[in-house]
Image 1 (cartoon, chains in turn brown, red):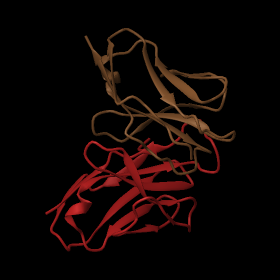
Image 2: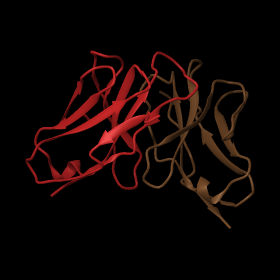
Image 3: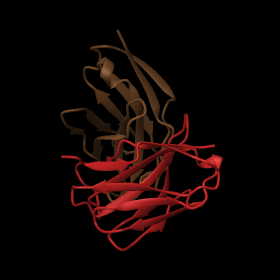
Image 4: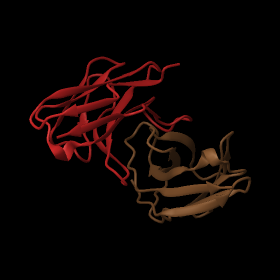
Amino acid sequence: DAKTTQPPSMDCAEGRAANLPCNHSTISGNEYVYWYRQIHSQGPQYIIHGLKNNETNEMASLIITEDRKSSTLILPHATLRDTAVYYCIVTTGGGNKLTFGTGTQLKVEL
Amino acid sequence: NAGVTQTPKFQVLKTGQSMTLQCAQDMNHNSMYWYRQDPGMGLRLIYYSASEGTTDKGEVPNGYNVSRLNKREFSLRLESAAPSQTSVYFCASSEGGGPRRIGYTFGSGTRLTVV
């Protein structure tokens, strides 16, 4: 699976959009970009995934660049409950084993 | 829906003791996984089971054994616990076989301390 690079930490004001970047320059054609988050010491929670088109669900939006070498997870109106570690993972499929990096610690503040 | 259930939630072991961590899922998922997470670090894969009857090593399998008892249950055994195995252990499941809309579902974790 391709390696990903994320900033170690980010801050965001409550109510504003949180944009979390991820670089995956070695991604191959059959690899998907997955995003998970881990709130405090709970188990990670699936957020969204995509191949090459932008995706949106009730939690977030995923923007993947045309060359697929980077992506951005967007939380449109961040709340305090969105404070968590966000993991960007590239893998060939949801059934295959996921490799977690250290992720981005997002802190949402008043 | 219960999702993925792990037992126990907390455990303290003495060095050399053995124990089994239990994991069960009620989503009819094919694949199950065991991860460990040390303080300040990401999750590392210990073992996984792509389907009932199969198991494979992950990134950090030494000191552990697993059993895929049936489609629902996947247990992790520490035969002789060591302080280096102090960690939070997460079990997860997925439909397997390719990208799926909901990805993995994780349990709430077992916090293990070996003294």
